[in-house]
Image (tube, rainbow, N blue to C red; front, top):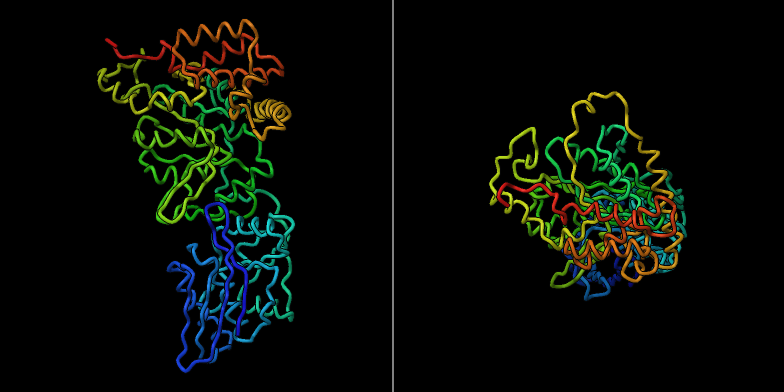
Length: 515
């Protein structure tokens, strides 16, 4: 007897539909063969299926069973095909009608006693099912909140293979799962308030500009000046994810095996802060079964690199292409997977290995050669991609002892949201989300400065030796400064302030004696 059921397996942040075909022939010596490029987890599903069928009291008759996974030339990975293979197996045994699961996607891992266990990548599978026009998906109950965020497809959660069989047989239908409310972040980061930051008015201003335009930001200053404290408060002044951003972000978290599964739709912008000992594969993504790296887990959010100069140079250089393109492609011999990585980079660094170069309160003990080696880890092309480069001096003790609090994050967030709304209206027909994403054509259209601003840009380009990329990034920041003022035109004072944020291009960066 022959049966066919539809399943799926994750493929990056998308899904590969797999048609599970089972052919059953009577035989003296029973056997079960799985074909169609299964990996080890898929191949071992036959043992889980047979054990689950026995626990249901359905010992199959001796037969020669072939399970084919189509398309046959695509590798199948993971345990999400357990459920469709089990249902097709039972249908081929005559325990279910052969076409009973038409129009339904089946996803789930089986335990030996027939319970349905959660799997990774459910959200991309459900999104693919909606695009394909399927009417329903059957998923493990532990994946129900994640699957139900997709409208237009009924999510039917089940506890066991027995429940699925009774539902498909019509004796005990499964109830659709409601769309979950609230934030489904698996990490639940607590937003920190800018009111806790004492002093550092220039750095606070840079943080607001970065949030308003989605710009990359570098804080450089001595230890204890508040660089990390400031950076960790950026998520608190960013707007919430919109529906499209939330779906894209949740898809990344859905397929990753390195973090807890999302409990629904992620509404807060991610904040990822990897340690400086991280490898290139862990930062960018990779592995034999490619997984998203930290830059993809920070998609539509913030990637914070503390102690930037302590990262290996090759690790930092791997950021150059994702910062420019907003995605990273990981190629393997059989496949190439693309993960989104449109993140906002915020970094913190000391000016030298000891951290006290240029300080009057403490002597720097670093030699010029040590400082050169230290700073050479940050290449010119990478610096060009950082829009705001801010020197953060230590806070005077009198300000630290002041009991007055700074402006709270809520007030800053309102100004940021107003600037983002202006950008959204201006770029509604381009598909761009913020000023930092503007290309040369959009810069020419919306960020062209007035006459005085243009002359200032020309002098700055000549004096500072700006690259074309740095030139355009200054204009993007100037456009954001104008948006924060509600101005349609980019004036000379916007350009002047944008240039002032290029600390690494200016001569006022602290330098060692004799250099």
